[in-house]
Amino acid sequence: MNEQDLYERGLDVRRDVLGAEYVDSGLAEADDFMMTFQRAVTELAWGYAWSRPGLDRTTRAILTLGILAGLGRHQELGIYTKGAIRNGVTIDEIKEILVHVTAYCGTPAGRQAFLAAHGSLKEAGALP
Image (cartoon, rainbow, N blue to C red; front, side):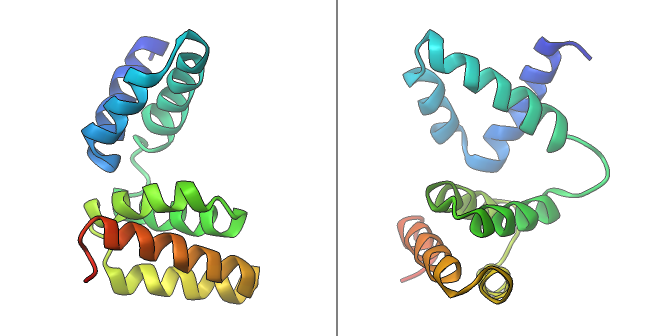
């Protein structure tokens, strides 16, 4: 598969997972310099990793939340929390993912992850 095929496949998956409005906004705001990153992440993460047959999207979403929370990437965690809901992860499952992160990565990481996910869920209307 060539780069353009990976990009196009990745763009479809990325829009499905994160929402077309979010993805298209990021692409529209990208200048030539940032478009290099947009293409790379779309081809590698979405066209390759998220498109592989070994795991379903719900499982990938769960893994991604745990990884981002553990790494302390809270802004990205908020974005991917909305994507996780879109891909069938329940609010109770998100809580359990973050409890697990808290146990293994520590309470500061867990607290920040809970705050990021909570804000994202409220913004999306998934919480009152």
